Image (cartoon, rainbow, N blue to C red; front, side, top):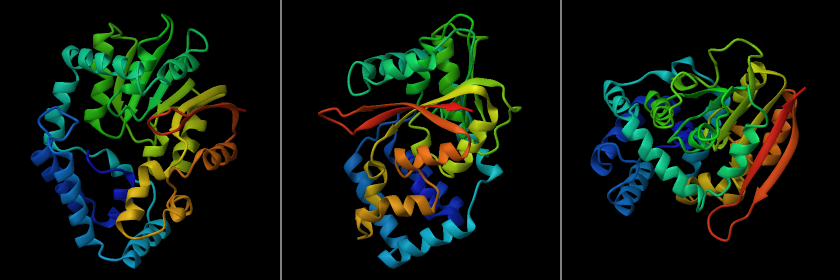
Length: 305
């Protein structure tokens, strides 16, 4: 999916139109099975022109933000899928696809994603755990956890998107974890699990790429056992991901965090820590990574009390 969570905020009343435009962009710029566009500059230029045509002024930008903040919220319909997505999913739920993902993410772990070693180790504090990953995405965090899965532990990885969830199944096949790890499609705001059944919940950039973050944290706290842990990697500065919208509409980037708070998106590790505390999740560890190249990121570990 080309669009991110802020696009969904701006177009929450026009979701079908946004989805249709996204499919057109994917057909034009993304070869089948690829997450990399053939011409990123042309894609960005076309997307920016479309956005400016739909939202022509800074005032219109802020009006849409206020509308979402006041009227939108978690939606159980978020897991609807198109036939085209189901076709893609069949390709990702294979051993061959999983092997490619494993190779790609192992290479990334030796480079810009060097934090994967720490996050994977943090999840596996002990054997015999029931682990839930939220927001499978392309499966980078999934690989970091599955590749180290102790023999008595079990793992479920979930995503709104059925195709993304199949990345977890492909990785599980590649790593020989059938029967011990799997991906499912589910809604982060209405998790299909009983209370207090997971020892650890983890996510790799999942919370800063989600909408309605407070609701996700409430659900995490609900499904965690007492003493259970939430382990996550997130960006230090949310403007790294969302600042482009403010630049596009001539809004000050300094407004970014306050706007993100209003629409209940990720607005930084401090706000996330405060929201988690309201759900009974106490910060137990914070480890920052400030590479010479790439964005700053942070490993956060919370415990349920």
